Image (cartoon, rainbow, N blue to C red):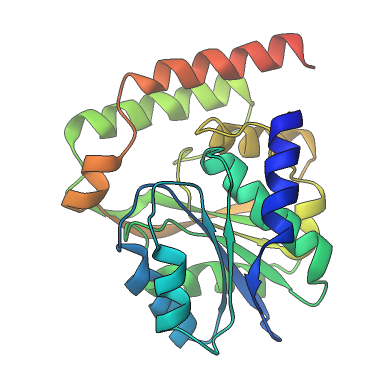
Length: 252
């Protein structure tokens, strides 16, 4: 944790860019993505939203290319001086917002590899409009559609749904979906401490323990050749479950 705090502190102090007066900001972590995030970030910026892009390693000069391509846009880039993991990168983005941007109203977690669609954002916005008491809205690929999902991944995800019901006591149709939208104030109740992929289950556990008002909405997830090549290996699910159980037993 000391290393995490040090990496985050140094990285935040060297953040580049400005969010201006954006109502909604996307937090996008990236690790070993080559140039895949450039059109992803561009589509969000062109729609008038802000982006906090966290380079978590092995992305070459991607940050420089983003600033060259989208100068004068509401873009902030943060480069981790050491790889933390997706959970650690998301928390870095959250901490940046907590420290510097009080006017932001909504925060969106979004993947850098093209799996998520900006076209699904209205589903999240509609949920908040219809129920102002909601604190967080979660995307679910099993309420709508997926494209090119491997059968083995579908089986593992279904097993994760069962595991989450036992682990966190919360019923969801999709438990490891990285597309989320939350009110800015919700960041004060969700502090991600698990740096790797376990963070997805940790967030759900926090929704339960903090008694957050939540809802699922349908989204479409696109499985491309790039996202499948760099995606989580099936065997890693067992490591995630072990780490979650260890934390729940020894740190609660």
